[in-house]
Image (tube, rainbow, N blue to C red):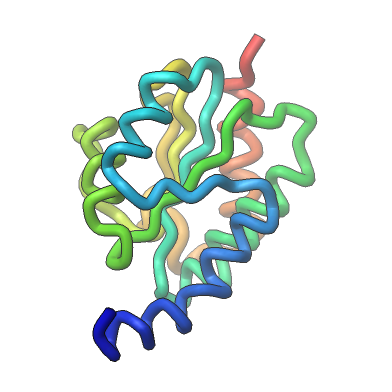
Length: 145
């Protein structure tokens, strides 16, 4: 690993951990993404994580609070990290290719089909509470069962 990769790994570690310590599974390769998508039944919450400020101050906290605020928990919590796990991110985006690439972003998939999508444009410039409530509504609207 070169010095830049080592530096970035140290920088993004806490950003990854903010989600993984709250029950998210990181998908770091295209193969892991494909495996998840082929096996996941029910509702998947997918966070395309990012190093930017709106991910840190809005997206990740909103996701965590939305999960705490709803009784309609997704069956699967997964995340890919844009700019870091490039192949995994590109592969995940292939599963909702009708939406422009956006990071951070939040997707709700129901049996592998895109049911709701919150792009950066609906995160940046909004309050954390706005994003939390939008996600909570999407989770409740697309709950399994």
